[in-house]
Length: 280
Image 1 (cartoon, helix red, strand yellow):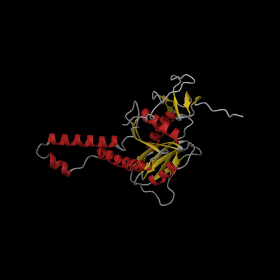
Image 2 (image 1 turned 180 degrees about the vertical axis):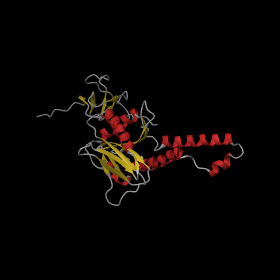
Image 3 (image 1 turned 135 degrees about the vertical axis):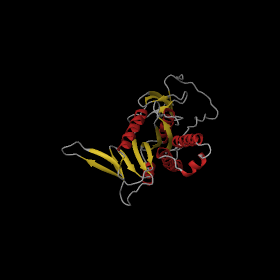
Image 4 (image 1 turned 60 degrees about the vertical axis):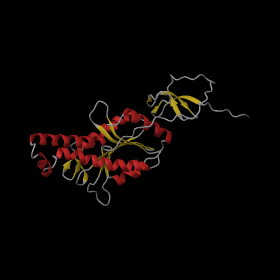
């Protein structure tokens, strides 16, 4: 009995978001599209090819390269901008003594904080670039459309998308829980004596944004990664309101863990996210 040969392509409702092979249009999860078995890619329904048509091609067309971005680029630019503006202001106000004043004074904390943040993003981003493979794809410093905010790092892995926000804060990160019996339970993120709960609020907004882009079938994980903080030798990491709080060496094995998403799906998600969230 002759075995039936499967069709070279199939019309289907996408389980994961993808990108049209022909026009590069974004195809959200649950969109109907044509899946091409030979290339393991998808295309829009509008690109109809008559049944039985054989198209001869030469070398396969390489997909457009993805701009993965530069770790800490926008924070570094903001630091340099503020530093240059201060220097210009002081030199214009004190033509003769401006250089001496700059040599004997530091930039204000509001300016130095941008450099501190940039260094943390650069260190984490460099390591992520070293870990990158076909099944672990990274994006750095992505601009959120319609906002001045950005996402520091996105990592697409077999276990979903990780939204990573590095922070270079002094002190020990810890979770304080208030209420829970009579009063409503409230979780606060403290670093040393500093209340940093607003960082969790920001991470949750970024996670929701990415969830809207990739669809409900792709897990999205939020991470606050504290660089150079005073972590204990044993334990220390925790989760608050669904956001993981940890340090770099605790993060990297999670990103490299095996999971259900295949390489083709990871590549499609990576390309889609790169186009939806351009470099800042």
